[in-house]
Image 1 (cartoon, rainbow, N blue to C red):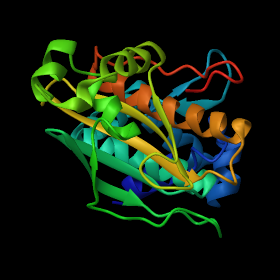
Image 2: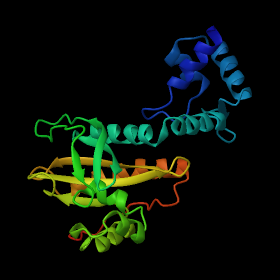
Image 3: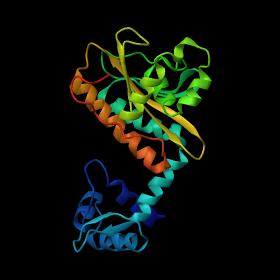
Length: 252
């Protein structure tokens, strides 16, 4: 058990700006004899938990650990993975985030992450929004073909003008809404899905229109896009379009 605990302690040193370690650094940070640290890192290399960087004496997580991390993310399911991404973006920027599912012509938040800023959007888990009239809903509809969308909205006026908006989302990889569902509130949303379960979710950040400018909005979009792209890669989501930040003044 002691060896496993020591190995766990070494792995916990990675992250928060630490991408590689030497024996000396492990000795200092864990407070163990240098000989013990050297033997521990060798055992971890032999087990595939660590690997050396080229011909240096620096160690980084081995490929086995990367495989385990990927397996862990997949085991969470697309909702769990999306929740991790949205939670991280919420923590970084202080604005409320949601993970939403579509059911017919409506979308509902299934996970929410309340913001921490003094001026923030109040969380409202379970609130139903129209799919065509919300950023989250449109990102999920954009994953469907036009024929599938037409079937959902057959004979309904909401279909008017919807297909061109979905084409624009398919081209840029995200949706943006300004004071659409709620006065004074803007939203950025990106959808990602799991081909194995055919389940798709929308990752969304909502924020007060008055306090976030173009630069802040683009920064949040980039952070949300980075996480969503990682999920799509892990799950093999062929429908996913990597979001791109538009030129100034072309955010629509």
